[in-house]
Image 1 (tube, rainbow, N blue to C red):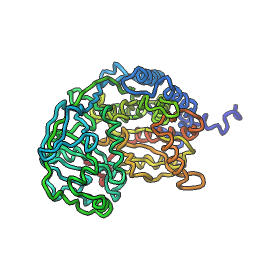
Image 2 (image 1 turned 180 degrees about the horizontal axis):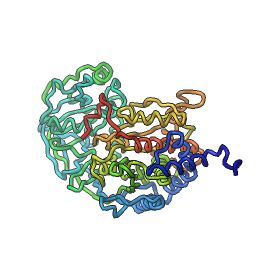
Image 3 (image 1 turned 90 degrees about the horizontal axis):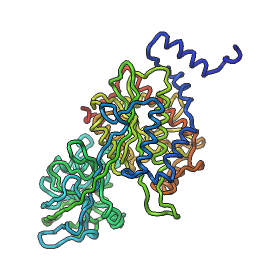
Image 4 (image 1 turned 180 degrees about the vertical axis):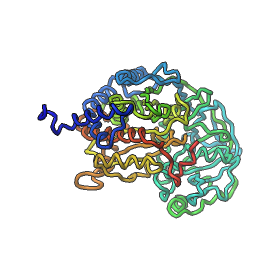
Amino acid sequence: MKSLFKNNPLFILCLSIILFTTCKRETVLSDENLAQFSESVNPEDIRHHISVLADDSLKGRLPGTPEYDKAMAYVANKYKEFGLKPFGDKEGSTFYQTLTLRNSVVKNEQSFMILNDTDSLQVGKDYFYLGNANEVLTEFSGELVIAGYCIQAPEYGINDFENLDVKGKIVVIFLGAPSSLPASERAYFSDLATKIVTLDNLGAEGFLFTIEPHISSRFNSIYNSMKNKGFESVLLPSGKALGITDYGTHLKFGGVINWSTLSKLTGITAEEYKNYKENDSVIVQPSNTIHINGKVLSKFNEFESANVVGLLEGGELKDQYIVHTAHLDHIGIGRPVDGDSIYNGAHDNASGISSMLEIARLYSKLPSKPKRSVIFAAVTAEEMGLLGSKYLAVNPPVDQEKIIANVNTDMPTLIAPLLSVEPLGAEQSSIMEVVKRSTNLLNLQINPDHMPEEVRFVRSDNFNFVLEGIPALRMKYGLKTETSETGLDSIINTFTKLHYHQPSDELHDAMFNFDAAKTYVRLQFMNSYLINVSEKKPTWNEDSFFKKFKK
């Protein structure tokens, strides 16, 4: 007996837990015991979840299809297996938070844009409309002005509207944001939704964004891709649609103008654009008044989908909640590549869902209830514009002020040993202190976002919680290898180029490192657990730009 248990870490952990729970109703694992407990992550379970969710039979998990419903059922059944309670509604009657998605497609043959009351601009050549999620018919009229990046941020010394009144105007905007901004703030101001809110608050009539001169040839490919596909939005219980084509109170329309057309109308040159972007020069407004009026007619089609939501009830502070999110959807069936038209989404994001399911299993195996409750949400329609998480964040099954944090898992990119991480958004709140503890326990290095130009902070479901004032974390791979601080850079770039949103994103062992998957799940579970059992709720840093969203 003595030799059997000597130096057995699992036995020591269990014995310490038993002794501790006799004295205290809720066990709070020490950092050492937490690390030992998280060793029970099972890479084979992660692999199995991915094999089911990324199988050809699910046809790319497109919301609104029978195959997506099967993916939802798989997640719901796992929730049941782990002892989670249904939490799709406030009554706890179902795992499914049902929602309605609206597809809006512009009827180009019945829409138009007229220049100076005389000349019609040509759709698909000069411009195209994005549609309007809340209005079938929109008519507009106004003077054309240029507002650059469309940023109003005096705290960073940036104001594209300093000498520009856009009320009642049609505003040309550039995508992106200055590289001088910190990574998360750059992501926020690059987001088209942020620019739309800014213009709406300033009373603009509409907007047209343009594509950078050196890649202006993409105008045609984007138009051809979107003219029949349209854009999705999600309907709130009030009937209002939220999404990229929800323009708020004053804005009436949005669209895209070809760079060559813009240059011909206003006289702006590629050199002026470059000087604005690189040297912060002032945009020169058109010398002559340019008046545009038009009509946008849209066609709506609506369909149902759902977030799959489960609850693990906490103890002492069970009325406070941490929300785990991972998106369940992918993009379905598309253009064939090498004879394969199923976009399986093994990495994006079957791996994220699988990681979240394993985190839920770990929580269910804790020796006692955690201090706070944990909501697990497999959200829909992320690929359509973060719509499922938008609905969840603004319409949660609990009072919103009771949600203290979001931990999001989206495409971890589990392709190599995990030696460093980039905790997107953590630097904005006290969550970074938690990340420092967990990474230290796993001997992982913390790095800043190595690709701020990709604005990853706003491109996943965590961002919708930030906009509601809730501190959030999105954990991404760092670049460190055994031999180099940036050794994964070329590997990740190659992987992304070949497999991101491609039919080749499938489950092949050569494309996954399941030891790294175990480390990743351990890390995200530790982050969540340490937030959960802390005496204090996460708080925004005093100097955080995103603190302003706190409610």
